Length: 243
Ligand SMILES: C[S@@+](CC[C@H](N)C(=O)[O-])C[C@H]1O[C@@H](n2cnc3c(N)ncnc32)[C@H](O)[C@@H]1O
Image (cartoon, rainbow, N blue to C red):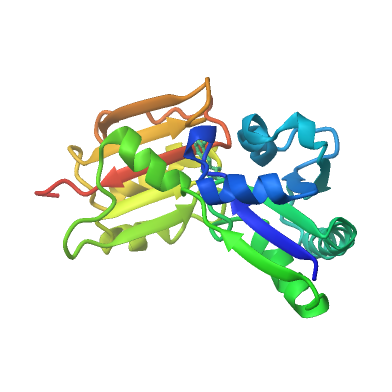
């Protein structure tokens, strides 16, 4: 039976890839990975690259997922990539699919998994979890995600932000993922929602890479100009004890 292992490669530092993931990579004949265009590098592949042994001569296949919100284009990409993945896995006998962070948080994997399970039940699937970027960031920033009865909310910041004000009222910690360009709007909404000026806030970019940037500040002091921020950014805010 052909076997596919989806792997969470963690947020950027290859040392955070699990031993189980490394064993699956070693056992694969083909390594599949997502990219936003055929001529763009795969971030997931770049994280795992130091662990890939050249002597194994593994085939590397990039699956292209365009950065679009057009439902028809997304559906087409998921269908096309699931079929290509199935062909490659059948041919290889053993393959892995690399994802950034964990495969079940804002990842291409779940769309492929659904289609493979439905259309290719002959392929055996297993998943190796990875360290979620937000969890790695908490340790970089030295901030807890949740304590005691506290509630944590994770928000993708490149979509409709109108609910942020409401969500903020019932969240002790909020983590914003995806495009850092929107963090200026997020900061304004958090201030309006009643998070006090002394609420601890941290922003991270390109964690675990040579370009890593981490800023620890407060909601009152943070500079809301986020024009320099990139897609691989995280913002985390905790309600001040008195806030
Ligand atoms: C498509 S989501 C993938 C999330 C991933 N599956 C996870 O478990 O963290 C991509 C977003 O994750 C966050 N992210 C992932 N890796 C990161 C890193 N090394 N540095 C900063 N943010 C990162 C950013 O918010 C980025 O826009």
